Length: 474
Image 1 (tube, rainbow, N blue to C red):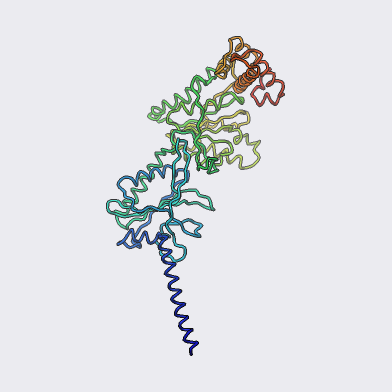
Image 2 (tube, one colour; image 1 turned 180 degrees about the horizontal axis):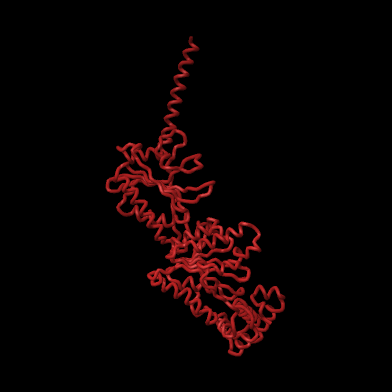
């Protein structure tokens, strides 16, 4: 009997300990501030089951513009009552506002310090963007909540999702619609990337540790006088690019298309890329998108950006790598990429302010249909090897910082017939190298040039000539 009495006391104490333990656990949970408790308190006296949740999903690459939109919106007539990060343990699919309103004893979403990530947009300072966040807000005496979370598939983040919880009333619906409209307007303005030179990066971070996604390129400054091409080439370039852009508005009034496709072709090193650098600066307010051949798989994303950021210039260099003659294609994938490019060029609306510039060193390897099908390529522009006048200008251009006599310039022009602009650039650099080695005073002489030519033309063999763009020299 005494044994049973002690057993009863033990059970009672055990129950008390268990009760005390559960109280401790609950207190610890309260200390972590469950999101459900925050939301219930925020919307009180409105019941949580009277809340409506609306959501929109935006591309992951535009989160810099989304952050700027939020910063402006929550600083105007909307008061931030509480802001925090959100985390839910063992949630592989992320967290939603519906998860947050449920009172759960097993791993409920809790508030944590907000986490930010810095994104390089090509400006002096990066944009600091939120990864996951919850805002408890009030506007015109109506309370609502906004949850920002990443979203994606198969472990890869592809977008940013906004969920807005509002009272189920006309005023609540108006708040949600106004919020999403503000975000849409920010995306269409695209302040972070408009007018810059961009490319998409599949690797999301650089060596600086900053996230990219969209890389902003700082191209070298190329002035009009530094574009050294034959007069006929310059006229075609001016008429089909510069003047075409200037006349777009009037062309549109006459119901003419404002999109255009141009092919730059010619031997390597003749100034195709150099000219693109010039055009990216000369076309005011244009966004330049640089697509390398291996990135054609991202063409749909590039075209979405081109339409969003128009007027834009889409540059696809070495197009022969994906647009070879069908007889030389090795797999159906090659043909799919070619068709995808042609369809994107032809599928744009007539009023799309988009320039396509394709470049190739081997026009003969392109499929004939690429050059002949209307609506794709409207003008082919040849970039030939520089003539005597061109080489004279190139020598003086690339000898900036040193001195050359007119006799030396004439000698170099005579001895470099058949070379590319790239060859001239390297020739002048090597001439300066030999000049430095003999402790020269800044005046290049014929000996410096001869030593450089000998090393470039003879010592490296025929392969070196091809690599330097001098295969046409005798």
